[in-house]
Amino acid sequence: MELGIPLGVLIVLFVAFLVLQAEYLFGGEDLIRRTTGLTYAEHARRGFFELVTASVLLLPLLLAADWVLDRRSPKTVIGFRALAGALVVLTGLIMASALHRMSLYLDAYGLSQARVYATAVLVWAAVAIGWFAATVLAGRAERFAFGAAVSGFAVLALLNLLSPDALVVRVNVSRAESGRELDASYLAELSADAAPALVEAQPTLPLGARCDVRRLLVANWGIGGGDGWRSWNVARWRARRAAAVLHDTEDPACRAATPGGEPSPTASPDA
Image 1 (cartoon, rainbow, N blue to C red):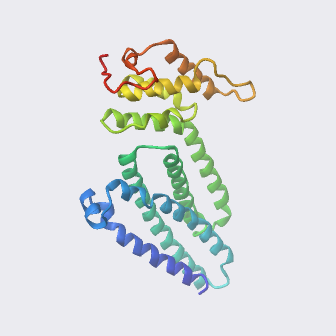
Image 2 (tube, rainbow, N blue to C red; image 1 turned 45 degrees about the vertical axis):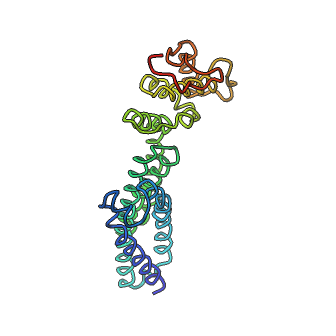
Image 3 (cartoon, helix red, strand yellow; image 1 turned 120 degrees about the vertical axis):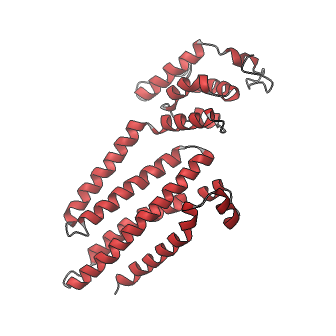
């Protein structure tokens, strides 16, 4: 009873949430604006990180419940596994809702560091909860910790392989090529990992963004800057090499910049 009541309340709460979210998951922008008064972007912004947090917190809750479970009664064990299994399924649906909101978020605002890392945490939580169902709920709890740790290291390795800041640049530049707004200042202030991707994307950037990125990259990583041997790393070395390319070459379109260094509002790509 001590475990069944709180777990049952959580199941009711999750079911109520999913019922309320069902039409938003399959409805379009007009439906969301008509029923909530929010734009698609505002709807996406509200709730994603809360859904990630709720999904991640469920795992320690279920582990704690399994730890205090009285296994002397087979019926108690079966009841707990049924409730925990229902919560795992419902959490999977909530994670799907969070990923759907992230897709809306990306469509409205583009990618950012926070969104990359939050999605990575959500992916790890999904794998860990699935592993919980395959081990703890199947009576093999001793295997859970190792698998959860391995999955965590695998997600970290995948993040390093993808290079989050470079991924942010590629996604947002791709959006800009289709006519979406680009926050060039944000991209140029990312870590050294973003610099080579920004230099590679220079020819496809809008004029104003291209000039801003050139100026900021040269200022951040250009000639005259440097790191001592204690802080040297490959990413910073690549960033300074990429910025040196911009420093040594001139973009004719940016010659129309104002004396203050900002692109002229009247400058055209043919200037």
